[in-house]
Image 1 (cartoon, rainbow, N blue to C red):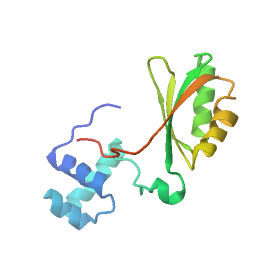
Image 2: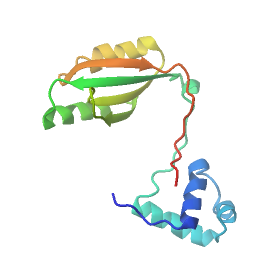
Image 3: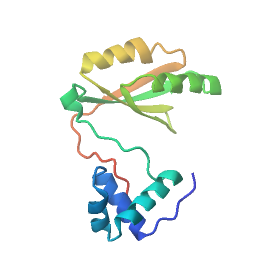
Image 4: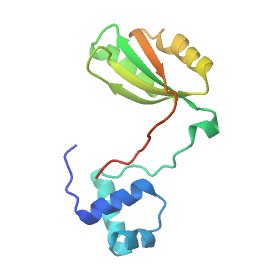
Length: 155
């Protein structure tokens, strides 16, 4: 994706929406110093350009019994296209895996997994991840506490 030119009003709209996506058009317009109609047009343009994605509500993991964050590093047996596609499809099909990154270095993938508890993670690791035909090995780190978490990008 190419870099999109955003002016100061666009950037201010993005900053506000990243903090409070459910803000009214009138309140948004007041905060960014533009008319409600102008804000609406700018939002639609940025959606079309791919700057703004889906509007979602963030859920507190503890409140829904998913309070354990695990970072799982995965090393592949093979690195051919078929093996990577199979593993990436596998990852996509597991809702416990919130994020997956293909990485450089000693490990091939880094997964962020959110589960209920250690037993829940053990089942996923032992019965799903480590038995996957493309996976050679893995290493896991359990998050003790969340020090910082944000979904807002600096713009």
